[in-house]
Image (cartoon, rainbow, N blue to C red; front, side):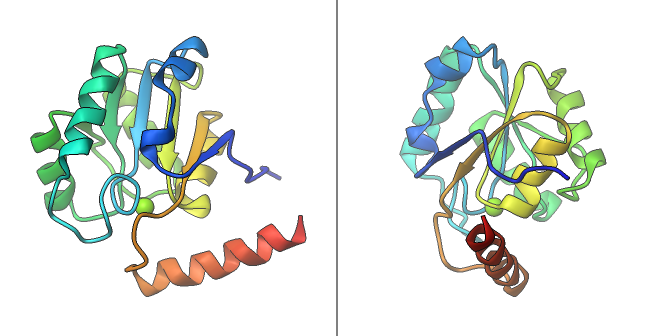
Length: 160
Ligand SMILES: [Mg+2]
């Protein structure tokens, strides 16, 4: 049974210390899109996000979006931010995470995953032994499916 507790939990991506990641040997970050770097369904890219991507790059960190959103939406953000996008979708399945690792040319020793959902981002990352970072979701506007997931997460969390 895989433990669902993330290696790190922070309020948002801006609370992630790139130095701490680099110290752990992290060179790559697989990053979720909706509710992790932008509000769900939002098209706007906040200027702080460009700054965050730049700061990561300056630390030598490579970023790759892995999202279950539409390919068009993923490509829109990846191209504007100048970062990579995984060729496959379908979190939490391994093929999705493996495609992100391939795109980054990374492995479980040097790759972290950042996301707002336990059952997709964290679960998938754990299965590949990546360093997992959970952020609080940016927006409450979500799929109904995601809402059902959150209810499940609360039930699981209360059992611990
Ligand atoms: Mg998300």
